[in-house]
Length: 425
Image (cartoon, rainbow, N blue to C red; front, side, top):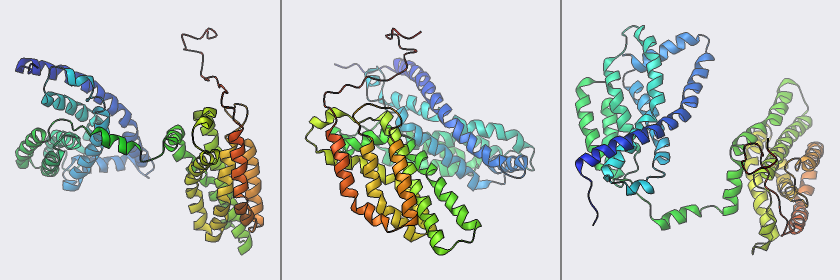
């Protein structure tokens, strides 16, 4: 028979769990502090008078001039931080913490401490702006300062993924709306709604196992592994691929070019952008997710594995193609006709007989840049490239079949810091 925790044990457990979750929230707050404080600060420094911009922002957020919009803005930032921190705080609550001799309410309230602590960057920024707001006409609005704890707590309760969140979130949202204006007479009502929302939201909701499995199979496993291996490169590499398009845009804007020459410049910029993007993705995949020769023993054809990699590599190329379409729609269509062959060549470049961690994309980069230059001069070559896509698929599949199933690639890592490495000093 399971013993229910007594009130004294529950209070002691809440204190210990709250300390634990406070450290969790502090780590999340440190992760969020840099972008949350850096982006507004950079935006203020780019203004003509940064000090005046900071003073006006302080007066709007903490003074009497901001009113309801300023309170809503603060509440939205707090709610965004709490929503971002909630899945990270609750990730392990379904494991060993469930065996602790405390109630579900204690688990919930201790985790809410972490969600409140994760919003510390907002409170820290407002604390730094308070001296500037105090020097402005009207000073600091005391109602706004008094409403901050209610807003932060209501944002934490609204972000809590409870079993009855459908009941708790409307109550916490109403508490935020009553506390945001900074009116002292509505704060007791907001506090009462907050207490009711915390009690109504219930314990942590656990999704059924079947639902978790179905959600995990939305994308193929190979696509998920490759996407995770690419990581931030899926964002940075497409942005860098816009540089050739930007260069050709500057050429067209600053010079009077004939229509044929302007179209060729657009084709060249978009083509180089696609080639550079594919080369960068290939280099990243070669290091983070090299081709696994053992996969040949699986009941999947080599053409399918090559096609999956080619599709993954081709999807981000929509950004340089869209940028090229802004210059010349026909030029973008011409380069898009070359994309299947280029993506298949890039997928084939990943597959070579000997292991390599860098330089895999160098031959592809040279061939792709040459093709982009020729297509810029002779656009009808795009039709030839499109017709050659099946040949590129056969070539890449042959390189896939040439992989030795029993080949062993040693794990590459730095020996320094490895206690099992004899060669480290």
